[in-house]
Image (cartoon, rainbow over all chains, first blue to last red; front, side, top):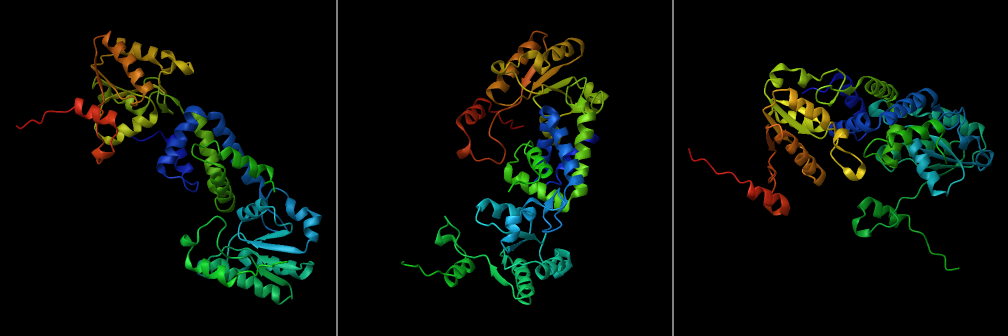
Length: 202
Length: 202
C-alpha cells in the first residue's frame, strides 16, 4: 500500500530533520494529522518565518534576526576585549549556559577543511582578521572543537592573532567533571596530565 | 542568552513532534537554518498541504486525500467479504507490509476508553454497524492492539458482529517470530499454549 501523495511527501520532508528515520517520520506524520493539525500549521509557519527572517549577525556571524545579535550589541561585552572563537551557534549557546564568559564571540559556521574545499574565507577568517586589526581585542579564546579539523582551525587563527600581537588562549582539555578516570581516553588523560595545575596552598 | 524570537519559536514548534526534546529541537533548528533552508521551506509546504488536503476515507476512516481511499476503492478487495478492524492508519500500513491480507479495513482512530469519555460513536462504531448491516461482509477480523482498551474494544465489536450473525475472528497472540521463550512474558506464553496448533502430518 502506498500512502496518499500529500502524506507521503510529509513523511519524506520530515526525514530531512537530523535523526529522523523512516519509522519516526511516519509516526510524526500520523501524530500531526490525527491529533495536532494546529501544531502542524504552527510548525509550518515557524519554519517559513525563521527561513525568511533569520540571517547572520554582521559582527560575529551567528544566526539572528537582527543586523547585530544581542551579544555583539551589548557594550559591556564589547568592552571586555575578549573574543571567543567557536564553530557553530550551538556552541555559543552551550558556553552562554555556563554563565562563565562575559565577552564576545566569533562564529566560524564550520571549520577549515581543505579536502572539502573549505578555506579560510569560507569560515569568515577575512572578516575576523579585519576585526582583529580594527578593534581593541585583548585576548582571543579558541573554543573550536577538539577534533583534527577544529585543532587545525585553532592553529590557523592562533597564527593570525600572533601576527597582530594579540594574546591567544585555547580552552582547557582534560577529564570531564563527573567522569571516571577509568573510562577516559588516552589522549584526554594525556592532556589532563600535561595541563595539570599546581594547587595553591595559600 | 536568549535565542532570537523566530529561532526560539521554531525550537518550540519542533518540540510538538513526538520524541523531540529540547536538545533535539535545537539541533534540528540549527541544522535547518545553517544547511537546509530549502528543506525547511519544503517541510513547511508539505505540512500545510497535508493539513489542508488530508481527510478521512468515507468508507474506512483512514487518513487520505481522496473521498475513498485506494484500498476501499479496490473492487477486488471489497468483494473479498473480509473486514479488518484496526485502531490507527499506522496499523493498516503495518498489515499491508505483510502482504498477507487482501480484504478491506475499518480504522477506529482510537479505542474505547470510557474514563477519557471516548464512547462507541467517537470511534465510528455507528458507521461500522451500518456497514455490517448493509454490506455483504463474511468475516470481521479484530486486529485492535492487545492492550486492555484494545481487548475491550474487540469484545464490543465482536458482540456487534455476532448480533448480525457475522463470523468474527481475533488475530493470534503468541510468541513473536525470532523471539526467545526465556524473554517472553507470562501472558503471551499463556496465549501461545492455549492457542497451540496441531501439526498436520499429511
